[in-house]
Length: 97
Image (cartoon, rainbow, N blue to C red; front, top):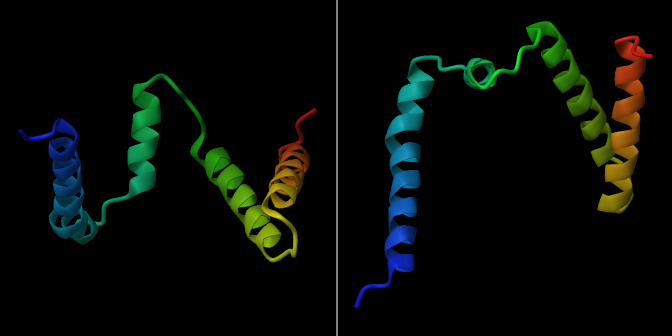
């Protein structure tokens, strides 16, 4: 008797392998932009935003997280410090009161 968990696992692994071997190189050759697809998905589900603001917020958060990675702290301390720093930086950068 064939177990359905094994069958489902093989299907998932096969789908991932097909994506990595065939679909991903095809998308890269066509200059597929993941950011544009995420933006379209958000618009599809009713979220509206300004592109430049989202990019600035993402860049600010990424910069702060990269800076926190260089510190000699525990992961929990880095997390709390990064969240606090991102919050303060976004408030000052976008002039939010």
